[in-house]
Length: 57
Image (cartoon, rainbow, N blue to C red):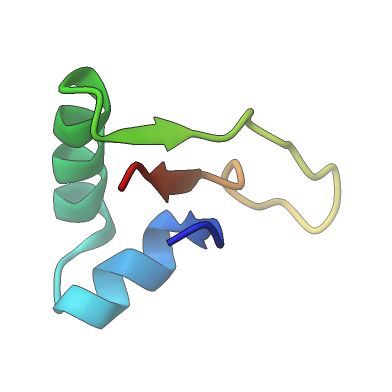
């Protein structure tokens, strides 16, 4: 999969909370299985960082 996905999209797809999804994504990133895109911040409206992960296959 080369299309980046947001943490919330992954959480919804797998029926997890955003915090659970973030924990698992961080674990996979530490194992070198996925790569996180650079964080992009939005000034308005206030939002969390655009967390995107890429699966290495």
